[in-house]
Image (tube, rainbow, N blue to C red; front, side, top):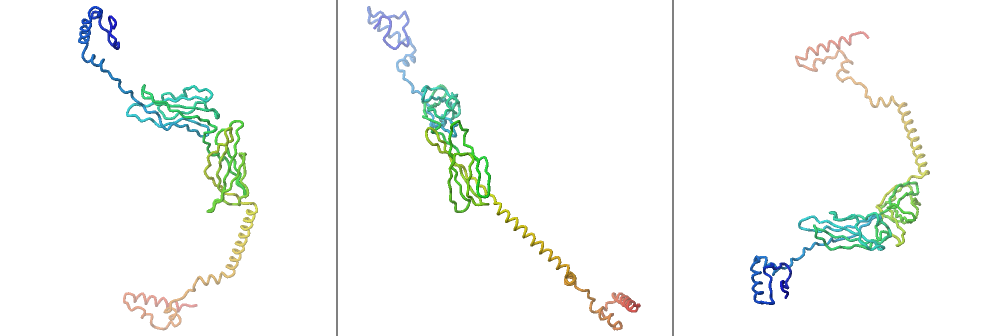
Length: 344
C-alpha cells in the first residue's frame, strides 16, 4: 500500500486531513478507513461497491436489402425497421471494385427506404458494392451489404417500344425503338413473335438487327397479333429483355380485291336501276287496272235503287213508322218526287 491512497478504483479520494501514515500506526490506518466510509452517504457508498453494467440497447438491421435495376436505372432498397417509438433513419454508402473505400451516396439519415445511385457510379460496367444501416437517435444498427452489382450484367431490360405500324395487303411494317437510350457501340437484336388472331394460333418467329422491319407473307384483310423482345449484346454476354404485350393490326385489302369489289358494286347498282325502271314502266302501263283494283265502284243502297226503278211503288212510309220521324219521311218523299218529276 502507498502512504496516502488506497489501491481501489479511483472514484473518490480521501480528504487531506484523513491522510494515513501506515508506517507508524497500522491500527490508525484501519480506523481512518472506517471513518472515511462513515463520512460518505450510505447510498453512494453502496452504489460504488455494487455497480453493475446495464445491457446495451439493440437496433435491428434493415432486412430485404436488394439492388433494383430496370433499363440501367438502379437503386438500393430495403424493408423498414420496426420500432415501438421514435423515427428510424437510414444511411447508405457505396464503394467500387477499383476503389474499395466506402463513400456517402447522398443518402445520410433519410426516412425513406430506398436510395438511388448517384451519377458518379451510374456506369454500366463498374462493379458496385452497397451497404445500409438504420439509426434511431444516436443508436445505430449493424451494416447490411449488397453486391457486387454490374449493371450490364444484372439490370432488367424492358420490352422495346413500337413507334409505328404500317399495314399493307400482305405485310406489316414495324418501326421500334430500344427500351433505353443507347450508347455509341451498343448492339441490339430484335425478336418478333406473330400469329393470326384465330382460335387456333400458330406462332412464328423472326429476328433482325434493324429498328424498321417487315412481317411478310400474310393474308389480306386478316387480323394479326405480334409481340417483341430485345437482346442486348454486351461484354458480359447477351442480356435478354422482357417480352412486350401483344398488339394486333389488320392487313389491308389488295388492289385486285378492291377493284373486284368496285366492279361488283357497279354491276349491282346497274341491275337495281334496270329493275326499278322496268317496275316503273309496268306501273305506268297498267295504272288504270291497278287503280280500279284498289278503288271499289260507288253503289246505291238497295231500297233507293228499287225506288228509282219504280217511283210509284208505295212503301217509303213503311221504312219507319215512328211519329217523330214521319215529317222527315214526307219531306224526303217530296224531295224525291220533285227530283224524279224534274225534266231531264
